[in-house]
Image (cartoon, rainbow, N blue to C red; front, side, top):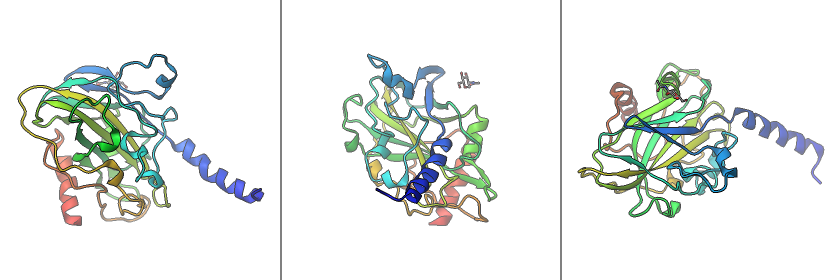
Length: 267
Ligand SMILES: *[C@@H]1O[C@H](CO)[C@@H](O)[C@H](O)[C@H]1NC(C)=O
């Protein structure tokens, strides 16, 4: 039996993590129409409701920790299963990811990745999906902790919007994600909150999504943008994950330009 001090230590470690857990994507607005996303409490419904949002074990508004960044949980959140519906969209569609809540303290980067299902997204093997990063934002100004795109997300009704690139018709999964850095100065302290959503894209777009990488290779616990002290006098931030591709133009162009220029400077 482990000595009592061990128990006390693990308790102290686990408890703040639970208290800090925060937020999930409750729905997606596509071209002005609301689609219910995945909500953790749905897992007790039988049959499961049809949602384009992938199912995950995130009833606690929880997150994926860096020690799982090479494991399947990072792909579409904990124990994720395919969303069993699609959101119809087309090139130029405005897509808004609506979060239920997000604390100001949970500052960090926001990402949107896309993968082609090469077939049916409701049955595709998630470990076979290869992703292209099409949108990113992170640090904006200041430090300790500074201003981050998550502050803008909160101001935008706790939502994040993208415009779909000129995608070729087909079935795609978009993986929207916030990584909270408030505890990231400690090992394994960053918190990834991914949500996958199925889209059925129609229209006459021409862009193919190719050259992507599996989500299990996006981040490492030791990446400078993953183990990062928000409460220090930093002068920059290294964007974690694969390089941004030019697929997508966000509406808040300046914000992204800023992040991208910064990304270039850091290289
Ligand atoms: C803000 O978000 C809520 C859902 O949390 C939604 O019902 C409402 O329509 C949104 N407001 C606007 C202006 O988009």
